Length: 176
Length: 430
Image 1 (spheres, rainbow over the protein chains, first blue to last red):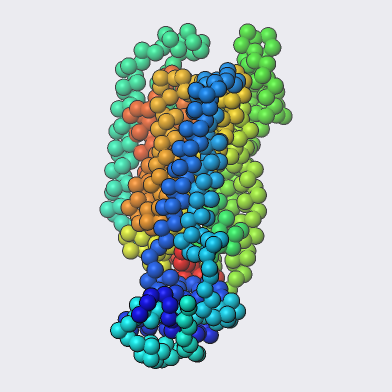
Image 2 (cartoon, each protein chain N blue to C red; image 1 turned 30 degrees about the vertical axis):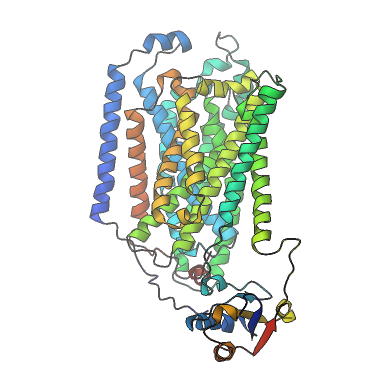
């Protein structure tokens, strides 16, 4: 079976039931593709077993890039390209460079972090969002389970596990 | 999700004989080093002639003792008042996460009465050796040493008396600030402990009200005390950022002390309900306010450096172009900015005690260097330095401070057990 095509959806009404259900479903060896909810559910990343985001590392690296760029640019401009004496200071007056360096560090860290976040969470402008269930923007939580990654269990068994964990509905959804 | 929280809220800190012994050993080492430092400076007092040429005064070893007393007076006063300030902030901000840490914060304030007495006594003994403006000849128009600029500032110290006589306004401020701080410390502490016998939010609202009043008074008094006790050493020079600068230094040092005491108590099995989430938040405070201090330090430096007006830049010339002090400018920046910035940047470093223990200890040392750089160049000039006397005095003050704080924690509840937000604090999760 092809991956990322056919899903079983467990629909939940309540986030406390959802949290317990996720633990039960995962305890039964079912791999969860994604959980969609209309609002942030506290503690959901723990029960889903998500590792902590690596976004801070991206932010740090982009910040470092900003620092490097800012210092290189200023040293090049002020020392080599067009040396100017400002306020009687050296051409390469390091303390003068700090504010610009700080600003560019923050700017690149922020932009880089946003960009990485958009790409990694599939919010990039050219992304085609897949709507599993319209009610996830309203009042339902949906646990999406990819049939292909759970080939050993089968659709019915997954449905039973979801039902017994408190799902109000179990649906099927396929994408082209 | 429902949690069961059977924490022992009646835990009382036991100030064990072995801890007392360790603190007294540090105190003893401090005294030894201090005495050795005094002897060394007595033996090697070869600076007399140069100093006489430069400033018109011969240099005496006790001037360095006074400068050291003053550095530590100001520094530990700041740490103590920051304990009360941070406590008040928790109430003013209606903070829930910190409910289990309140007793640690307020305990620092127990140093304040001692600090007040020390400050006033040292001022009366050492005034001429620390503060140039205490010389009455500066205000006498017929004296060759008459100083027009200091004469213009004289009212700030001597009003309403005659300039050059008795600095009544200065003394009144010193007494008033310590009076206010000690009063509010006692008020907040007593209200907090009174809450242990009652429940409900009445005491909480009451403490909140007193905290708000304290914060307003502290905003003014901390700034003016920084001008009085530190900036007036370099009497000609001024910086409009100085109040913030001293406050920032105090705040980081105070937060580091709070973090260290919390980690120590936690390591000894106290403060059960404090977990890595609370430690993480303390770490964030230390991290953030280290950067805040750097921001203030650099803002003060950059404007003075850039404008390069002699009357302003003399402050940094005295420090950066001095063989004695210039290395410590960089020690200061590395310990107080580079180290906390790089080490405490990651989440793990803020959640694991060992990183915080190392960084907070170094920050406490680093901000001592900050005050060292504020006080010594203006009082001792090239006769100053970082030697045995400095290390000894820091150890003496540090161990005395630790003794007072632990003594005050002993035998009382370590957690404000009827705090209305204790439950919220249990579930603090970040």
